[in-house]
Image (cartoon, rainbow, N blue to C red; front, side, top):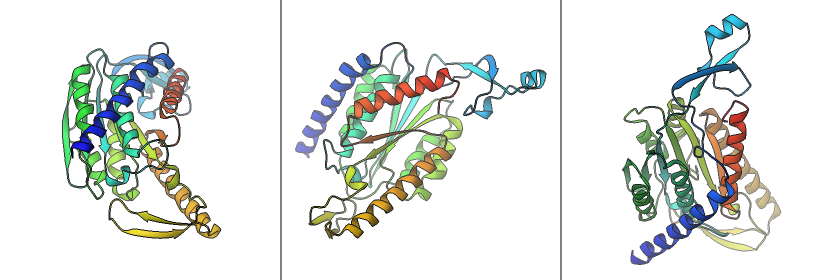
Length: 301
């Protein structure tokens, strides 16, 4: 346990150092977090553009001009952000530069850094196979630091967290419109979490952070390898020299990821994919830049 805590502290410190030193330097100018929330205060109207939220249609102006218009809103001064962090055993896996768990912590640190300002509050629900607990939303960097430390020091447990139940913890109790971030590898069946995610996306600006390792997408040709399922402990020996097996594996993995992506779109979620073999910080920067560009064109998806 002491070794796990020491590693968690090292990982958290490294990720926070990267976020605080590099993220602000790469993202010049003013930005309102990972997702530019639309706010609740009514603003001016403008013509509808493909991708706009139809819930913001300005029907009186549309009727008067005979052209579809949407009502713009002024961003709230204070934003409440909630994280749902899935720390199932499958995230204690990585064959490249990081474990998937490390990237989950990095994503939480980035969201915290980009949203905790001006009195904004951030809270979290954290799930493992044996436990799901809530960390209350509080303002300020000191409390955000404590929240990240609690996430990083969550002990690993064998098995799979109930992602649907974890997301439902953000649906209850109902809160005013804010930002919700779900961080997971989404390896559990889509049917178990798609509906609560759609419900979450109706009320809140929703960001889905998907953590992926390259070996979950394709197998290398390295002969016989032993694979252990971290959630069940079962071991399988696989002959990766078989090209048909590698093709079937890649095809099944692509179908699985396509189903996940479709479910995220169905929930109206912005989708950020972080890979253990790529520069996660640059991926976040590109995502924020794309969101900012989309906002200037009238859409945040």
